[in-house]
Amino acid sequence: MWSLEATFIKSATDDAAQGGLAGLFTHWSAYAVAVGGAAGVVLERPALQGGPPRVSRPLIVITDPVVSIALSVWLFEEYFEMNAAALAAAATGFCVMWAGVVVMSLTRRPRSKRTSNRPGHRESVRHEYSSPLSRTDEPSFF
Image (tube, rainbow, N blue to C red):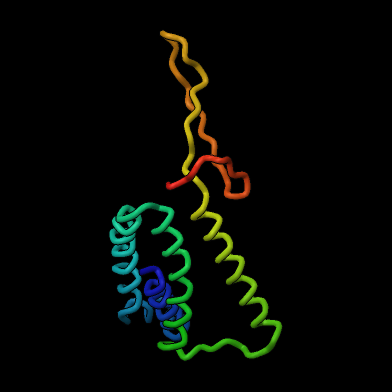
């Protein structure tokens, strides 16, 4: 959804560059940005709640830039510069993003540790995140 919104923003920016502020509101793209943004907010919430965040969030993080690139090539005829340094930088960035998604999807949910068990005292809860790099012997399913 946000990939399509980026496409609308690009089109609106082009309209504003050519016709100024008045030209921006005489074309469809400015209104598509508003409707697309509202639709994105409304649709992303159930998409994130439809499954565990370990699955839904990484899927959105990876597919959004890939779809954005595909839309920019298809609709605006933009292409990558074919030199080794630019392609290496893009590939490195994409690999770093994938690694971040893998670590994020393997990170366990926070666990609560109670700091007071005395009757009459309010319990305070401390959350700890565990990383896949600091695993314990217990299995992690969520």
